[in-house]
Length: 112
Length: 111
Image (tube, rainbow over the protein chains, first blue to last red):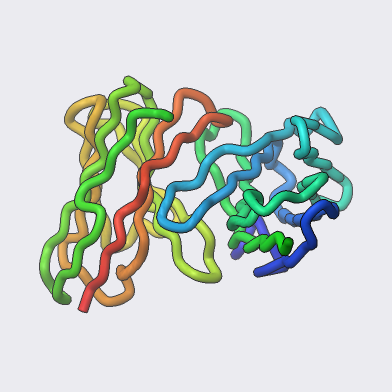
């Protein structure tokens, strides 16, 4: 039972354009959501997060949107840069659980 | 970068042999985690620890055991390795849910 789903295994975007990565979840108890970025042969690194009391969080070129009624979150990257090429994982947690549930990941490729 | 190392970084072993992977941290973080990463599955939690000698199972714990006798070390043991345990294993540490720091990973191949 996949509680966190990233239905697009890959995404290709032109440099300078917007990249939109999507994530859906099924567990309504999730109240904290995170995005991690992973380069080949490295561990994932934290990118941005959002609490369920918000619907948007922005950090520079990265914005995460949360739609609780649809159980959907998305990561927007504007403008996309070649260094953004990586695998992106969304993750979710329940307050107090100290555990994360990850999606399958989306490989983002930024084309020059 | 958080001080977290994993050893070995690569290992090839035969089916049925025991394998131990080590995670070492210098950050004195309370929580430590072991994940495996497989194509199509993302990162799945194997076991985690919330203190010395305090551990709990994750979603894919069958075939794995862990131990944490010191704050800085978290060991993952495959008692009898199987080909289905061929994977990339990541250790992570945290003090709060939004700051999980990951190690560089261990690529394990079971032949």
